[in-house]
Length: 82
Image (cartoon, rainbow, N blue to C red; front, side, top):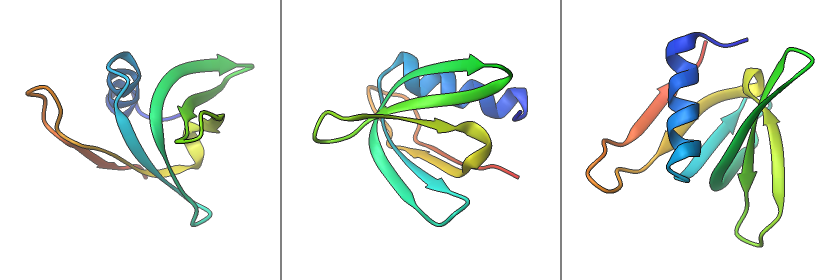
């Protein structure tokens, strides 16, 4: 599980369908549109749609950093997760 204040950022990018960059703990970087969040058996995940239309679920605990640009008057998002 991640902290509630960090979880709010993930909810915001999904609701607004923001383009995001996820930096994973394993060193991989994923770019795409934030689509949805889910919790399955206590595991929280975000769905990212890539540029070719494929969707990928990523566990929130595997994310080291979330970035999203400033869009429609909203501030840019750039948070690091412990």
